[in-house]
Amino acid sequence: MKPYIVAIFNQKGGISKTTTSTNLAVCLAAFGKSVVVIDLDSQGDSTKSLGIDPKIKQGIYDLFIGHVPVADVIVPTGFEGVRVLPSTYSLAGIELKLSEMQNSQRTLSTILAHTDLECDYVVVDCPPALGILPINALASAHAVIIPVTATPYANDGLLRTLPSIKYVQEGLNKNLLLQGVLFTIHDKTKTTRKINELIRSRLGGTVYKAEIPRDNMVIEAATSRLPVCVYAPKSAAAQAHLDFTEEFIDRHVAIAAKAGETIGGRLPRDKAMARLFAWQTSNASSMAPVTDERLRQKESQLDRMLYGDRAWGERWHLAVIHFFIDNRLSLAAFLLVMLIGLIALVGAGFEGVRRLAGLVGLV
Ligand SMILES: Nc1ncnc2c1ncn2[C@@H]1O[C@H](COP(=O)(O)OP(=O)(O)OP(=O)(O)O)[C@@H](O)[C@H]1O
Ligand SMILES: [Mg+2]
Image (cartoon, rainbow, N blue to C red; front, side, top):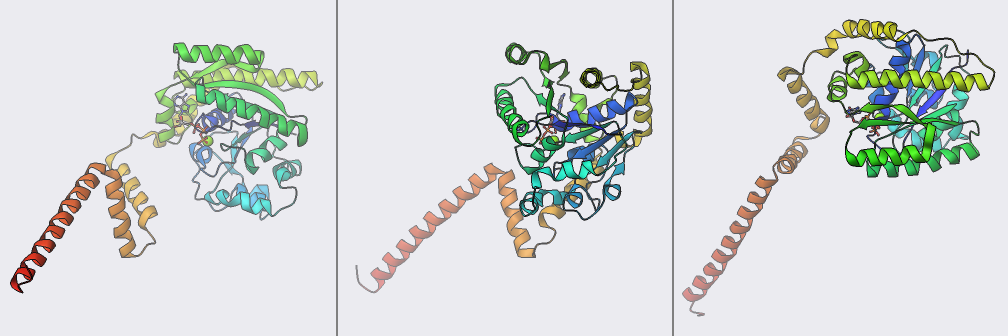
């Protein structure tokens, strides 16, 4: 079976690409579909929020440079029907590696063309900016979804993203379809409503009816490394992600029908909710509140990352710099004291010279 490959892409950062990817994948699975998430971002956010440790040995990097087959890299998640081709930190170095390889823009298409992933959907979480990885995603995808927020800068992001998609459609993948634009982190203010209306009036039916509202539950869920649809299935954001997933499947069914293909049905909404609640229960241990102990662990982890492999002198130097970065007022006071000290020292020096000159009878 050949999966429907969809890339979640916007050149702008922090616009909910990862949140959309992971929730779409898990909601698709809740509706009874099988999904593989490809995490193309070296930050590994979708890997982490699907409960996979990005310190695992092998990931997309190894797949891209041909070290290992897909079967060795793909990992199951705690959500039945969802597997991940995870990101590892080494993915940050892939640009350089791929630039040495031939046909590097089609590496992912070639891998996917030669692999049976045995799933209905592949969801590709893209990093921000138009580098070699998003190009690979767009070159291999059937469709692309652009998450946007209704703010002026995010609007600019959309204006830069649309030509990039056209560039890929004209050169690398003429079948790439813009499946839709999704409003995310949506606030209902006068300004956002105007931007929302403007984008809807220009892009018409391309924009999904579903809008994902700003919801603190999404941030709480990310802290627990879970998609919000599992962390809080009844929350406004989770319900909106389910609405969006239904719309996404309906659009796919319509696209497939035009091409004379039939797509299997999906489970009804109440069954999908029941599956989400079951995953919420089975992942309850990840949902423990952030305790002081966990915060201390994070702090010492951060210290090890910052200072771990450095000599003592260097550690102290960095610690002083970080102290002053954290305490700018202390830096100002420190510089003031140093200045006063310097002036006093220069003054004392002059006085000393004057007295000495007096003693030897020069003045
Ligand atoms: N609906 C929402 N309500 C509130 N916060 C949200 C919502 N969606 C996403 N966020 C938060 O916004 C931040 C950015 O989201 P996310 O990581 O999904 O964006 P991204 O586009 O993947 O970012 P990047 O470009 O860095 O990969 C995260 O802290 C996330 O928890
Ligand atoms: Mg991301």
